[in-house]
Image 1 (cartoon, rainbow, N blue to C red):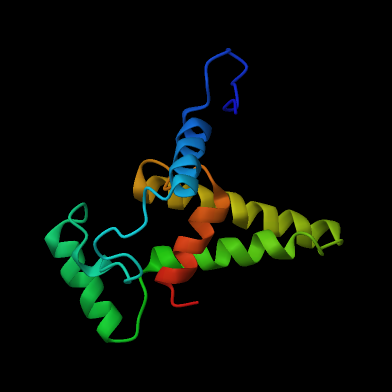
Image 2: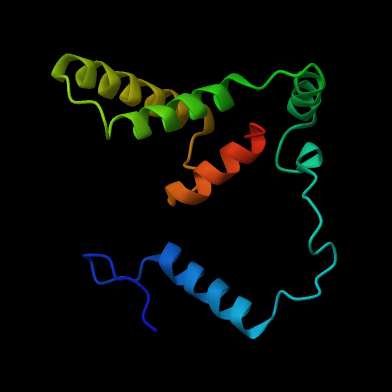
Length: 130
């Protein structure tokens, strides 16, 4: 198997990493790992500052979600609705809102969560409880 190549002739590192992960899964390298089948404890993510974790825990206990999660949900809904919007002015407004949300979400996190929209959407749905 060959990983996807970029126009520069260099391998696409995301595709290469994904290919290697898939190969390892087929070989069973991830079977019987500690914690396999258990939900991730996202409240204790070491990459999230402790004060942000505490704030997120308070919001979660109050039944609220962070603004970013709401914006991601709106972004996903807008993307889905664009497939059926035919009126030019409505489509234009939706595209403008979509661009604004993408810009704001990109500024919030600095770098993309994932270059794969499917994985990103699944993570957002999971975090939003959807």
